[in-house]
Image (cartoon, rainbow, N blue to C red):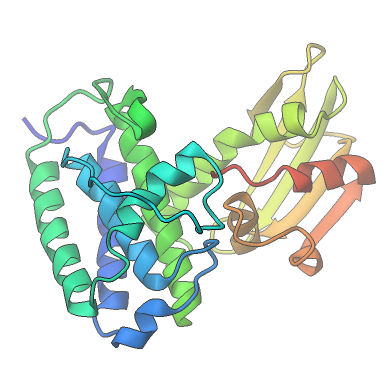
Length: 274
């Protein structure tokens, strides 16, 4: 048996992003590994450590036994503590140690994917002891690795791959969170619609319709007379959704129409990653 067709897009997206990450960090000198990234509290080394940790867990490796320092200001909840473990344990690794571990991990994960014969609905281990399907795990993983590739590109001044396979997975993951942002967090009026018009390397027009019960649904058809419309470019969209930039810092790249209180509430709750 081989990889299920439903899983192939996520394997392809991961492969594209992880190879890009390897190419980005291979030539770095030691000092460049300490550069700050848009991901709060994390350096280039920390981002690569996090990716290594994510992939080691996809491989089923045991988590490190490690005690976190108490002074990590960016770690404020259990999910962040869980993710920080794989990062902090590698904080003193040298550049050659980081690149060789990355190369070996890519070899192991490629072998795993070549031999993957499980059904997409198979339950696998998720963060903090949760369970999720293999399909959802691979989808989330492809999104995470692409988002962190973008963190590295920003830190290293090497933009690119905004329309790669991982970018399209990211679009779908982030759009899946949008109904809750609009209907629940921003408390959009019932029986209303909010339009998102996104342009750039990945472009789309999507409407969130809020029904009489206050539930939001994602639609690809435009809305007549929406309560609000937000127009922005793809890079700004995903950076906002991933918490890499604040609405205030990106204000000159966001055009809003309609109810100003509603658009402000949507932007205030736009970050959906932890």
